[in-house]
Amino acid sequence: MATLTWNMNGYFSHIAELQILAKKHKPDYICLQETHLKHNSTVLFRGYDIYRKDREHNTYGGVAILV
Image (cartoon, rainbow, N blue to C red; front, top):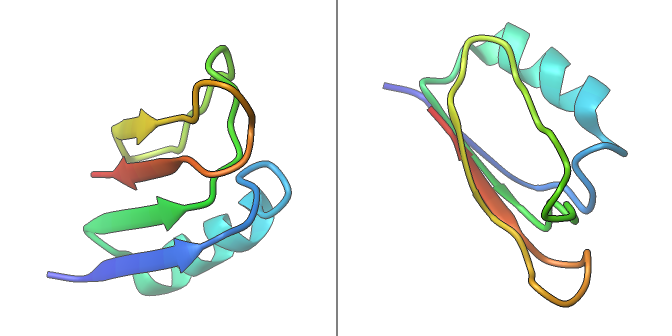
C-alpha cells in the first residue's frame, strides 16, 4: 500500500504537480497539508474520494485526504 504526503502550500497552485506525482506513483492514499481551500471550493481528483477540513476564518491551512 502506497501513501503520498505533501505540504503543498495551495491546492490550486500545485494541482498539476499533484497529478504528475499521482500518475507516477499511483498511491492508495494522498495526504495533503496547507491546501488553502475556501469552504465553498469544489475539489475533484479523478480516481479518489476527498475528505477535507478547511480553516473557518481564512484560506490558509487546511488538510485533505484522498482515498
